[in-house]
Image 1 (spheres, rainbow, N blue to C red):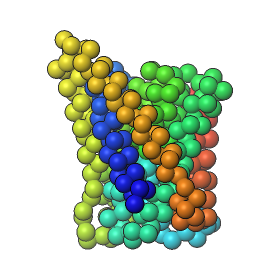
Image 2 (image 1 turned 90 degrees about the vertical axis):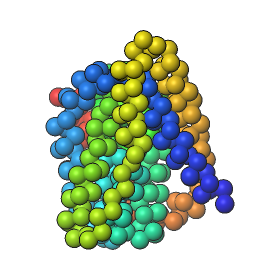
Image 3 (image 1 turned 60 degrees about the vertical axis):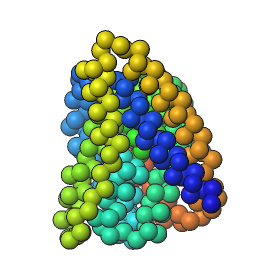
Image 4 (image 1 turned 45 degrees about the horizontal axis):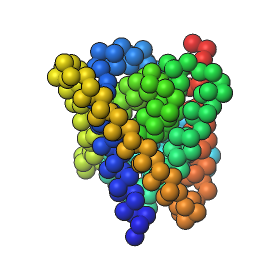
Length: 269
C-alpha cells in the first residue's frame, strides 16, 4: 500500500539528499569542527547505550532486543543504526518495526521543535549544530534541523553527526560479542560513505567550479524538504498504536535525557 511505498521512497530520497549535501561541504573545515566534538561523541554514545538499556530493561521491562535497538538508534543515528544492529542481534521484524517507528516519531517531532527551541534559547550556530547532532536521531533530520537554523549550524551539525554515524561499525561489532551472535552480517549505511566521497570530490575536484557543488547542494536541500513532507505524512495513529506504550516511553525518556544533558554540557562548557 501507500505507507510502505512512502516509507521506501522517503528513505531513498533522504539518503540521496544527504549525499548531495556533501557536495556543498569542504573536508578541511568539516574536520576542524568535528574534532572538537570527538571526546563528547564517545562519552555520549556509550552513555546513551548504557542508560537506554537501564531504562528499557530495568524500569519499563521492554524486551531485550527492542530496548537495545531503541538505545542504539538514539545513541548513534536512528534508523541506520537500527538497520545495522538488528540482524546482528537477530531481532524479529516486529522488534525492528517497533524500534524504527519509535525513533521515527521522535525524529519527526525533533525536526520541527529543535530549531524553534534553539532560537528561543538564543543558541549560537556552533551550539545548535552540536546539540542537534547529538540529540536528534537520524542523520537526515539533523541535516534538516541544521539547514532550518542556518548555514553554519548545518555544517557543524552534519559533521558531528557523521562522525557519530561512523560508530555504527564498532557498535555493531561489540554487539556481536554482547549478544554472542554467530551471524556477522552487518548492514553498513553506504550513503554515509557516499556523503564522504561527495565531500572529497567537492574539496579536491570542484575547487575551480564551486558553483557546481553549490548547485547540487541546493537541489539536495529541495529534495530534503520534500522528504520531510513525506515523513510527516506517514505519521498515523496506526503507527503510534503499533509501537505500544513502553517502547515509546523508553524512547521518549532517553531522548529527553540525552537532549537535556547534551544541552547543559554545550551551554556550560
